[in-house]
Picture 1 (spheres, helix red, strand yellow):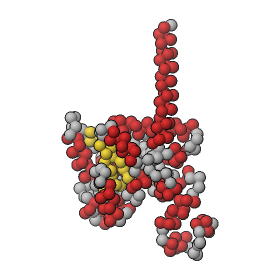
Picture 2 (spheres, helix red, strand yellow):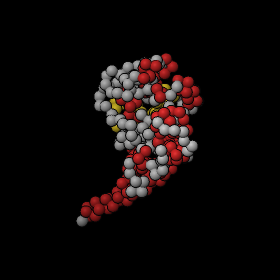
Picture 3 (cartoon, helix red, strand yellow):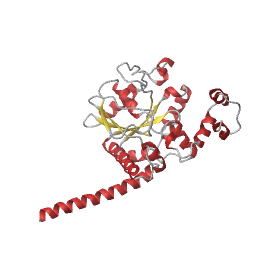
Picture 4 (spheres, rainbow, N blue to C red):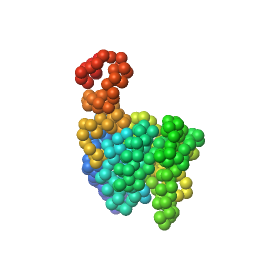
Length: 303
């Protein structure tokens, strides 16, 4: 009877600790991620129990990656790096004695001058690598040793071309030499759809298991470990939207435009349409939709 009672007590205590952890995780999510936007990542209603459990699970995966990693690579979208950068996350990583690397991904989508300007700015804080991931899998990936500064237009436009992977791997190997074991775990974190899994696939150069990627947010559901070589392991993490970035309508629109938030989850798409119109030459809009001049976004949408 005592054994049965002890087992029952252990079960009760475990359940109590789980409830406490879940409440703690929810509190952390509230301070570290945007609850308003997380349901967009998971394609669920933000107030549903399923959505809350999914948010909790995503945050647990992030914490797991941060706990295991010796170095954390924060992947940024080169089209708007600051809207997907979380300085509070960086500070937390540093507070645990871990190193931070910024990875400026999708450099093929912006002018070279913009890439150079962002590199100069971001390198004031952390080592920063300019990167272009392969858009297709396979062993035809090329450009491993090519730096962003010397990349040709052909390589930038190539589906198989990779830029920056050699520079990143060399930096990681340098860090590994300073560790007693000679090997490190590297967490790959960032907003949904900034290209985290594509970066890892490009680092593998078509070898081993190909991580699933997609042009919608929320493809990666849980942490995945990929061994690059005997010194470096990469930890892929589900995308999380952090409140450490500017919480504004313009920032939310930027997230949608970059597909960090799925458009079908928006309650009001008009701010996003307005942001797109502001970014696009008026003549290009008229030509694309084959329509006469319009005075307002409402008129454009109603056409």
